[in-house]
Image (tube, rainbow over all chains, first blue to last red):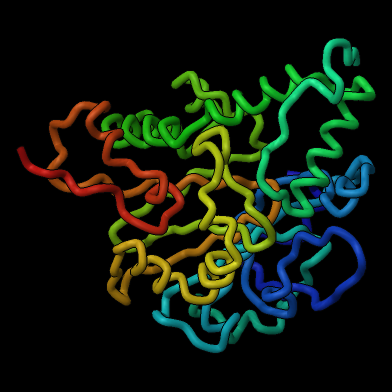
Length: 105
Length: 209
C-alpha cells in the first residue's frame, strides 16, 4: 500500500459534508456521518476527474467505510445492521476524538 | 457510409413513440455511424457480448465454491483469477470482491448512485436493481426489501448493505442450502438465483427427491 495512505482499518472517520459541481461519487445520505475504516481497497483513478475526460491522476486511495445503521438514520430495524460504502480518501477526515467513546466497536 | 440502395439509412427504428432519451440515443448512434466512428457491426457485436453474459456465470462460481473448499478460498482471495480458472472473463471489472454469507452475517448490494453491477458475472442488472425504490430502501430499510423477496432474518443476524459507489464490484457468495451434501456441481448451480448473488434472498431450497 502506498505510504501516503492516511487511514488504516479501525480508524474512526467522518465523511466531509460538502458539495460542489461535478461528478461526485459520495452519496448525499452519508455526508457528515461517522464510521470506521473497514478495509483499504487500494488506489484508483479519481472518478471526479475521469468523468470529464481527464486522466484521473493522481490516483486516490479508496476505502471501505463501515457505519452503524443507527448512526446514519437515527434508528435501525436491528442493532447490528451496518452500511458499507466505498469512499475516496479526500472525502474523509479523522474523527479520532471519538475513539474512546466507541471502543466497544 | 454508403447509403446506396436505401433512401433513408440502413437500419430500422422502433415503430412506437420514443422517449426523449431514446430519441437522443438513436440520434447519437446514427451520427457515430454516419461519421465512421463505429459501424453497425460494432454495435451488434457489443449487444451480443452484453447479452451473452448471464447469471449462469455467477451460479457456476458459487456452485463450485460450495463443493470445493480450496476453490472457495481462491474465489475469496483472488476472484478474478478464480473466474479465469472457470473460463469466465472478469477482466472488465476494475476490482472484484466476493462477500461470503454466514449464518450470522448476510450481505446485500446496491448502488444508490446508479446501477453499478458485476456485469461479467451476472449479466445485465434487473430493472428493480436500477429503480429509485430499491436504491432508497436498500440502504434505509434492507430488511423490508429482503422480506419482499421472501427472506425473513432474525434480529441477531447482522445485515451488511454494501453501497457500491466506486470501482469495486461485489458478488455475494450465498449459504449452501441444507440437504445438498451429495449434489453435483451442475445441480447445485440450479439453486443459485441471480437475486441470491445480489443478496436480497437465499438460494432456492433443495427439494428432496
